[in-house]
Amino acid sequence: MSGTQSKLADSEQSIPSLARICWRLTIALIAAALLVLLLAVQLEPAVGSRPPKLDSNTPQALGNLLSNALGGVDEASAANGAEPIPDASGQRIALTAQELEAALNASFTLLLPDRQAVGRVRLATDSLSVVLSTPLFTSTKAGFGIDPYLNVAFTIRSAGVDAYPTIDQLRIGNLPVPYSVAEWITERIIAGMPDGKRDTLFAINDELSRAFGSLELSPQQAVLQFSVDREVLDHLSWDLQRVAVSPTVFAISEFYGASLRGYLSGLPIERRAVALSEILPPLAAAAAERSKTGSSPQIENTALLFALSAHLVHSSRSGVTSYSPEIRLRRRQDLAQHVINSASIAATAGVPLAEIISTGKEAFDARYRSGFSFSDLTANRVGIKLAQLAVESEASALEFQSRVQKINTDADLIPLVSGSRDGLSQREFEASYDDRTSVEYRRRVDSIDQEVAALPLFSATTK
Image (cartoon, rainbow, N blue to C red; front, side):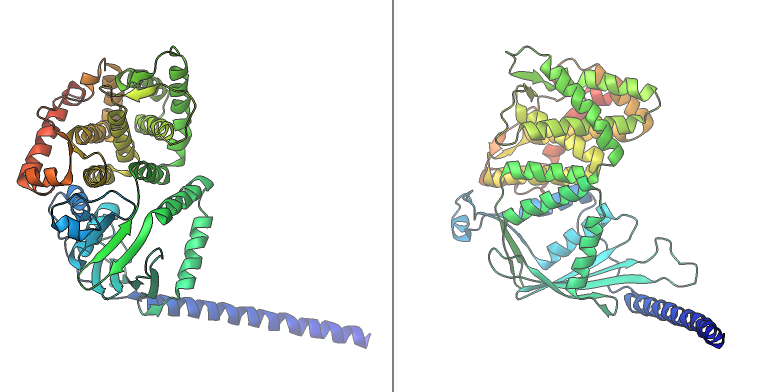
């Protein structure tokens, strides 16, 4: 009996002892979290607020900055007036610290408009230092009479040819963070993503890994050398769409993809091509019918454009052998791709990103491929305008469905731009327009925008 009582007494003593241990562990964890918070969060921004050092048209200006930074690696031949050689080593982007800082802050303005994030960039021999600062809360005060900031600083170091640069000296506020810890957290975040988005991020990483050549850092500039072709750029822009698109839009796009494949399979086998102006009206009619059942017209239109872009991207991939008529615009497959891909990017990821990608692709073509094309640029502008009509509001989305159903010919979809010159090499482009910030070039783009806006597709009064 006494032994049993002794065991009970020991058990009763162990319960409060275990509770004390759990309580102390809880207090320790809370204290550690508070300490980390105090070290990571600061009451002053590490970077003072400053506007981006670009003109007021931020998306276009950012695209122009990156486009003008494109060049050939062979500086000696460039200095002698020769064209850059489009080989595996002939592609690069060179930016000064001021240009990098301008691009970084402009990117924040576009991608994080509510965060008021600001960055500072410093270049040194073999290193690039970046300091980022943003208010912890989007409101002016946290409700406690204070305005805490999240300040992040890190250094990128070049590692030679065919070797990715390394990141070290990562700090969040006063808290040093080992890169391995930051990498582990990033991996956990990616692992928690839906399978489709995770696979897309891996695909983007693989494409960028294959394209990467080297990153050379000096006090004067950062020079990124890379090797890509136009098909890779198209696939990267497609992957960006897949990351940005919502699961709802992705699911609905399957309907439009099936509808498109059904329409194409019903065409006579001898038809090798079909006009975009023939494809769009029945798809818009289907979107209008689905919108009548309570579905969001903006979502339906986004899914329609996304499905069309998916079809065009996959049908243009190297090695695709299954028969399907080409979708063309003014008898050109590439013009149809420009319109739809720009429209899909603008609808899924936003107009600013679509404008930057459009400008970058044309600069890439001028440097390394078939030359600069005002026809391609016009098609890109049509696509962006089409997306704005498709998703800007519920009223405009319904108007998009109504107007697109009335398209009869390609002339209803894209103007035949007067005085258009295509295939301009970089030297020819610079001889006529200097660069993409010049008054002459802006005047030419404005003229194209006016011709696009004059199409009945865009100029009709919304009812």
